Length: 239
Image (cartoon, rainbow, N blue to C red; front, side, top):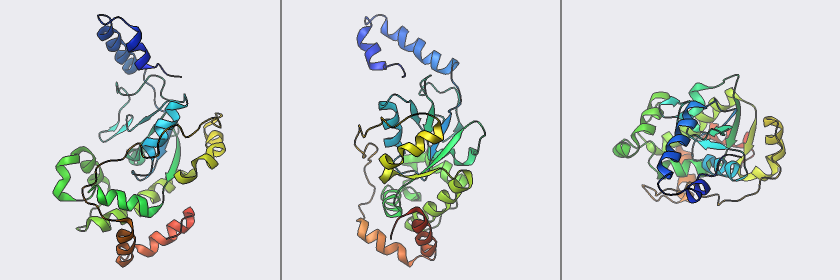
């Protein structure tokens, strides 16, 4: 288990605390290693929740701290020295890597498309609010003029890229049912993991508030919709 930074802060005298924290950050940088595994997906698929769950269970997993908008970042003080994995949709262009086990996390298409659309992921008018991530996505994905269509296409194309990297896959909605598979893939018993956090651990303020029913109906008009239906069916989702 990694160091409990809060416990360290509470146990040290105040004059010593800044020095101790500085040394801790230096150790993170000097002793940093590649992650042993990466949880990949589309973004807005529950990766923050899974990273927090692993961490709370004593198996350190960072979130977008190795695979960052600027690419893989080994010496990142935001990654603990005990981190074994990184959950990040930003990993896709840099995988496969023979040293990293990739696990593809999926979520119901309607939920992901609604979230990316409502957050304005592909809306040029608000790109300044999320410039590092916007720049990354723009580099690796062709935006369309319609943000909702981009959200639909993103789900299909980014998941296809994940499929090309790994066949290790699980639904976030059935995480507890897949713990044995994940344990097998990582070579570590994770059956003790429990849902110790809310599944909304990465909820963010929406730019627009389009209801799920409206988005689910609107995407049927796009020519890519049959591809989404086929992918959803393979993943075990019904549209």
